[in-house]
Length: 363
Image 1 (spheres, rainbow, N blue to C red):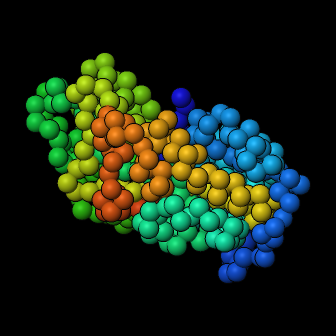
Image 2: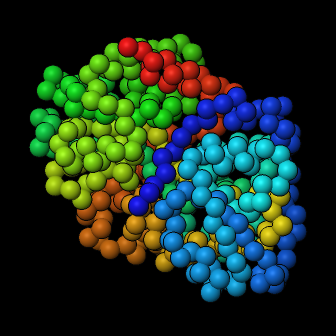
């Protein structure tokens, strides 16, 4: 299964300045009236989502349950869909799946429809903590689809002392040199150093970022590789002994592979569903999101992608054996919310782009 990796903004336009991208300067404070009794069979949807992030037969399921056609468009990264949604005019997308900070940026440009909670009764299935995410408190313009954190994925048989700190990654013992991988995705490359410095993962303090850069440059010669996608395979083969990893991608079902959130703390990332203000099918869009929040449908995500979902009813219904094999799935929401939510940094995101570029280019 192909899974998407959260990615950071890589261009000035995708820093979401309104002047550069042509977005609106304000967001409507009150949603337009929608018809709760609309004939959904006369509407249709186009959704954009990462490959492998929903059941292949989702359009057929939606048609059978809700009576309208659904077209699925695939985007590979947040940048790809953001470029389409911010290009001006009607993108043709009704519902987009984007990471939380990108939903925040879209809303700041006035491109999102405020949610009509009365048309999404299955919101009641969500954990209360799902309404406490920093980029959209109260779920006013987005509904979280998946959420998780970042930590250390390691081989307990190859690591002499179980890691407990980001220092175990950035200051590795001799036996782990050339046996460790880190991510290159901009915000996640900086995360271990920022947390070890006691700084925010959303900091825009250049002095702090400079210190983080020096820590990242120092460890670079000791790394096996920068790897955002295949670190799980490297751990399985024994090529790697420890990796910076998203929780859902750490293959803990394998013997001797463990996952831990370092004592200094970590992030809280989320992927969300948003409705575009340009959509001509807003009633169908709300019905679609409500359908996704059905425990059987939403539960597919945890069972197949192995990411935590903010749906309490669906999580409570998971097979206990799955939770035993993938203990990160069982992390309570209250514990997850101890992580720091990633938020949109606007133009300041280029600070992280520059840090990543300089670290990657260093010899």
